[in-house]
Image (cartoon, rainbow, N blue to C red; front, side, top):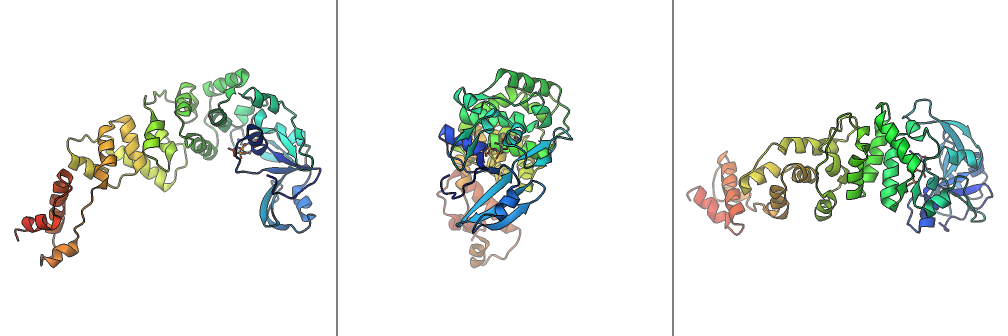
Length: 361
Ligand code: CTP
């Protein structure tokens, strides 16, 4: 934080960085706000190179002494279409107005870059002390329902509780949900929350009906310790191991995310009685999909595959068969299947010897 050699009475660290500093936690995202127009201010900084300007949002990225810094103008916003992106209404507004548009009191703290003084308009310091997540006004979740997931995320991350009134408004929102919202933003918050790999987040997501953001159906989530499963079998898309069994049609999914869900739907009706059928069914299936199978259908074949079968590979290739003067034909793949079955039974087989036997050489 101190590496930033920039001082002005109008410059403040804002939001997550101030909160994390007070909590003694590492913060990767440095947000700085300028009371006034940050773009105009940036042009007056000695030796600063302007890298990028976003005029409508009043933000600017500068490079100063080798360090890239993002500066935002203080701004006010309104939600012409609740649930969707807000519109900027006033660039260069007061610091108080700027923090009043935000999500929770713990995210409204500002700290002067010049003096280090902390400005706390809305009781954020007390709420950090009392471990409370509190929204700033009664329409907060209606304006931005992703804040319901954010509340869960912060509450799990910091072990904070939702304040009583905030919880009541959350329940009210979820009971009257209209599904008119930006699912791109919902997805971003789901990923950040579930990628924490927290069993508590999972259980609360269903117990508190937060899942209603995704579906009108009443759902009972699998009773399974997913956190431990993922600790044992790490994956990239943790969030999909928690949620991939649900209807996620509302979310914009990437190709890989769609493959994980399709792979799971493809294998979920399969039952297995031997290693060979497990191997054939699970080969080329995403690991996340296998974990979904373990959670929702049966963990035994998945553990058998991940712990043992997936490590078994044939070493023999078509070239080896050619060297034995066997002309390429569909017999090659029959031979490989035969060898694979044998190797799954006994990993120490002599593949060349067995191939010769197969071709009766
Ligand atoms: N914010 C908000 N409503 C949202 C998202 C963000 O009011 N739906 C505000 C909050 O004041 C937040 C700031 O924008 O502090 C920056 O958002 P973000 O980077 O997502 O949150 P951080 O608080 O920095 O948390 P993290 O540690 O997860 O980055």
